[in-house]
Length: 314
Image 1: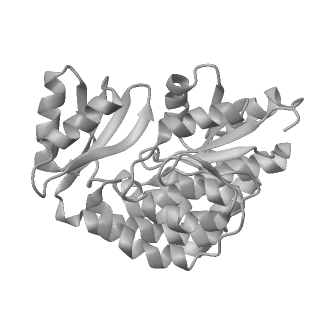
Image 2: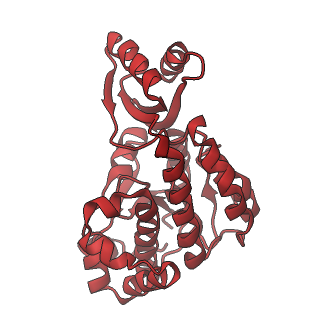
């Protein structure tokens, strides 16, 4: 019996056209987008399909869009294949998607909650004082040391994403980022400034986390049908109530994706990236080289998987 893990992408995976072909080809996917549209009153399906890109990239739209797309793919797999996953994990926003596909949260409740999450994060970012930089080639201990060296007074920079395969994203005040980039470059660590509006997963998001407490506190969280890994501790959780605190903490805490990926590899025979793009599949190739990892965001990818796995009991 094959054990299947579900990987839910986070912000940055969105792209204009996402979900259009999926909705056209699978009634189950169409119903998911309709449910999200009704809950949000936003015309989300149309924005996903047609853009404009600036609107889809807006964190207040991107977060519910990505969640809806991930859920749509899983509903198709459940209907067409009878999919029963063994575990799920999501990168940042994707953790909310993982909770929905596990049954811990209702879709309508979740899309409204993550739109609020996006609003709080965007408003906290409004001061424009923070940013993020991806570092490639630095060991965890060295990057942590460089962050401490680059942080001066109230200006801080911290590890934000431990993505695996030698990639660590740091986040913080712009001047602290500049100091860190200089220190890292001197050690031949490649630096790429990310096109984001704020220092996500850092102390600069503290106000957003505080505002999110009330939203998460009001959620009706059920126990998931299968374990869901948390970004905060990289552990599988089987109690919905665990996430009442974890969903708030993840806004300011680093995403421990390498550890999540290693844990997934130990719990699964195959991992499916459910959503647009193939960012997580790419990361998993570097984290767990022996694990089969398939991106399933478009109808052709879904059909290929259904055809190939037709004889597999999942």
